[in-house]
Image 1 (cartoon, one colour):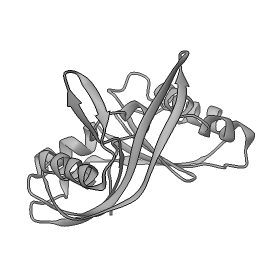
Image 2: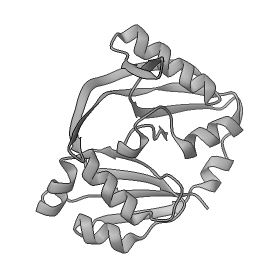
Image 3: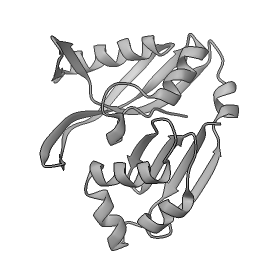
Image 4: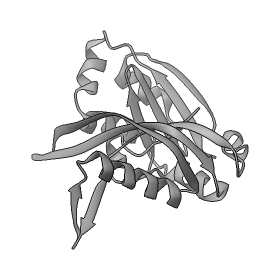
Length: 189
């Protein structure tokens, strides 16, 4: 059973501030709390952490995140209500890249970022109706002694569902690269 969890964090708590400094630290917290789950997705929006997973150990989340407010529900009823032809607003933080000869190159022009989002949403069973790029930034952190950089884009927009099965799969599997580090989880409104 897929779960959708919203964790409201207390950013004043020093333990929470320490975790929020790095996607690697958040990844470690989410991985520990979803141990045994297929690859979980997560997304950090301000003081809210969203997680999509098969299982969740809320005690582990509470231990690392200073007693946050945790709300978990079965994601399947929401996904089952999606219908072809339905219009939805969405938010997505992703790392749009072009791949050539096994090497990923960040897309840095607005046109390239837009085309990437349109292609990915089409593959995910949706027709893009409107798209805004809210923010473009580099996320840098250390992972096991290596410096990693993700060029991230925060998208919002509107799409029409064209293939609900593909969209359901994308909502559970994520979109694009960097899913372990908080990218690819799309929120629908």
